[in-house]
Each structure stands twice: as C-alpha cells, then as structure tokens.
Amino acid sequence: MNPESAAANPPVHEPSAVGVGPFQGDWPTDPRLDPELLANGDRRNVVDRFRYWSMDAIVADLDQQRSSFHIAIENLSHDFNIGSIVRTANAFLAREIHIVGRRRWNRRGAMVTDRYQHVRHHADATELQEWADEARVPIIGLDNVPDAEPLETTDLPQTCLLFFGQEGPGLSPDAQGICEKTLSIAQFGSTRSINVGAAAAIAMHTWVRQHRA
Image (cartoon, rainbow, N blue to C red; front, side, top):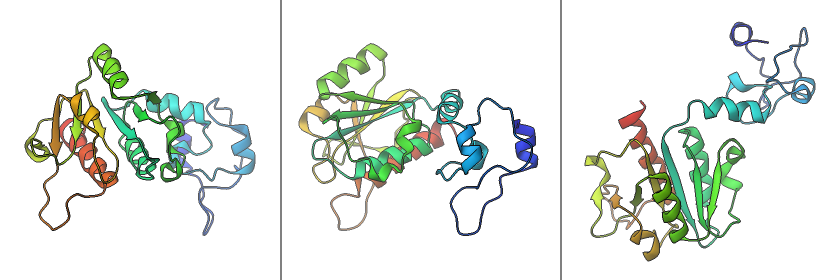
C-alpha cells in the first residue's frame, strides 16, 4: 500500500468500533505497515493515514514535521493533568516533552499519545535549565503570578520551552527562577486560575497561531 492507494481506498470503519478491522484485499508490501495490525485490525487512537502503520514508522514520520516548541511539566504530586497536557502536546506535535521532578507520572490522560512523542526526564528545575542552556532554548513559564506578562500580546519565540506547574500551586519557586519570562492568560471571572491542562492547550495553540497555522 502506498500513500496514493491508501487515499483512494481509505480504511473501512466498522460500526460502533474504534479504528478498523483486519486488512481486506491483496496483502500490501509497504514496509511501514505492521503485519500484526494488518491481520488483526488497528484499534489505536491514530488518524486514518496512519492506520496499520507500525509505531516506529509513525514516530519517524512525525519526526519530519515536529513543531519547534518544547513542553515542560513539573511532576511534584502525580498530577493527573500531566497526561492531558501530553495529549495536547502530541496534537500540536511538540518537539519534546520534559517531565521535571518525579520520574513516574500519571499517564492515564495521555491516551497512549506519549508513545509517539519524545519524553525526557529532569530531576529538578536546575537540571532542566542546564539542558535548556546547552540547547539554547529559552524557558517561558505559564502562571498567573503578579509580574507575569499577558500571553495575548506576547510574541512567543519560534524555538522555546513552555513550562507548566502543578494544578493549584502553579510553578514552584525553583521553576519560576529559571524562566526567562512568565506569561499569564487573561481571565474575567471569579476563579483564581483555570485548569492547567486548559492553560497548556491555550498556550500551545497560541504558539501554533503565531508560527505554524
């Protein structure tokens, strides 16, 4: 199966089922395709053009078109929002995802999207800063602290790292200390802050609108 034939003959979705069933027709020879998925069906949460592709083939294809922003998330209290942020980072194709703090993190909200991303761990904010300095990637914090600049009127660098804290407390003092600047999202209601997963989605989409849309 090549891209042209796949477009002409899109996978047939079975009623009330996620994905597609076993491949029908002449057995394809495309090396990107996974023989096990072809034989048993592909029920993964992937777009149709990646149906039956092996995971390695999908990652290799995504690597050719990744965005130039990175995402960093503090993992101090096993926040379930981390998985949601990772899923959004996959949707906008972040270059890399950086987990700062505990190595183990709550993957449930990621819906397996972390397998298609490059995830790097840093023991603390200092280690993240050392990586960013070496890679020459500016760190931009997202938090509604008093000295934060408005995201809505800020031009994000084309290459940057967007740093998010935990739900509730936000970025820790150590995390705030390594940020080149901190940005906040405009709010007009009574709540002190919006959900960190929602804030991350807004920030990433802001980068997309400025650099990729």
